[in-house]
Image 1 (cartoon, rainbow, N blue to C red):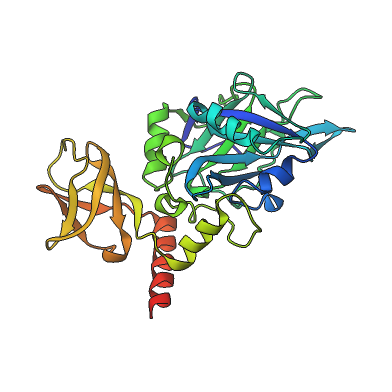
Image 2 (image 1 turned 180 degrees about the vertical axis):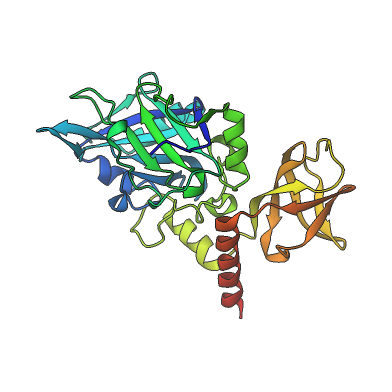
Length: 323
């Protein structure tokens, strides 16, 4: 299963927190944006404040343990895959909802490691969040948790998420070990944001409706009313989108520069690294095929297939509501 994957990275900026107890699913269902009842192996979700703004993003995983000679999902435990720097704040947020609840929180940061297999050679038949079952991946000793290997629940184009207590054996696989910056660039070019990049933003500003992170049909949860209203009214007119500079190499700092076309402002640069950047774009005022001006440079938006498809569908939805 791991053969012919092009890139591999340990995500040392992420940590695993375990939430365990009979009421854990009920509690998380009421404070996260996705429908936990639909989780397969892994699920992308958000924790919101009462103002509908993001406190943290997370990937939830269902661990498995061995019972009676077979692997079985735990019904009373969820692992949270979160940004390491936000660990304390998200734990404190969850604790607000645990009064008189028989639920415990454990920090597995030093016991479990998170890895990503990704790149252009990753071709997956499984859907986002589905487990990838392979006997070679059952490296846990009897009585331990089973390694989690699943399609990234945000987008299959991000590859495979893996959680284990040890470094996977890559000797028989055509895999290039990368540093974290390489994966971060791959993630950002797909407009998938996480960690401090999303704090205090409206979910739609950072495209979480595109990445299987929000269920608009589930019942109430913290921040649900404002989230539903924002979606149905289309009041969020700007999204963070990736771009590349197509003229003048060795680009300097473009932060806060205005992006325009024929003197019409369509956005502003949030940050850039050389010829790649992220901009806050008024997506209703752009032509996805056009190039735009920023300072004395020309840029074009990076819209990979899933992002382009989702963005076009949402633009059409908003326009149909106005007509």
